[in-house]
Image 1 (tube, rainbow, N blue to C red):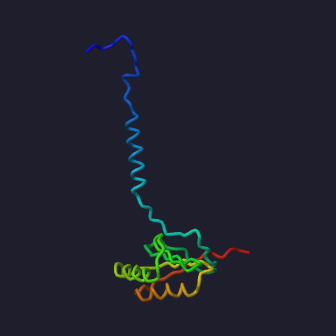
Image 2 (cartoon, rainbow, N blue to C red):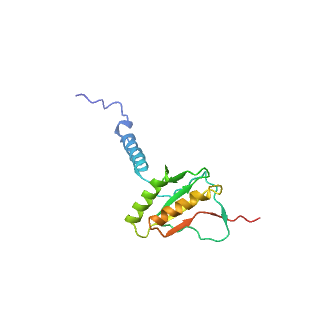
Length: 139
């Protein structure tokens, strides 16, 4: 094999970095797609009521139940029936005896749906039930 030494091209001696950059970007995309972010479930469509007293939420593992104005219940990003909510609460209470629940209800939600959620918590023997509200805005 004959080598052409007369051309004197310096770019042939450089290491090609493009495959390394491609691999790094693919790994970055893989880890971003594979990672789950543990954020508290927040439904932006809910209009929470205002409250004067209260405490900010502590970062504990709790089950969040969103109650919409039309009576829909959403847990873990999925709409559930009242019976499915009861089963989910009972399973959570069996796994963790210190389970807590955060009920986030729209201010226009039906009172009966909120009572049904509280009843489901009571039947599952969950005693730590909090309600989500916004700090009262100054007039």
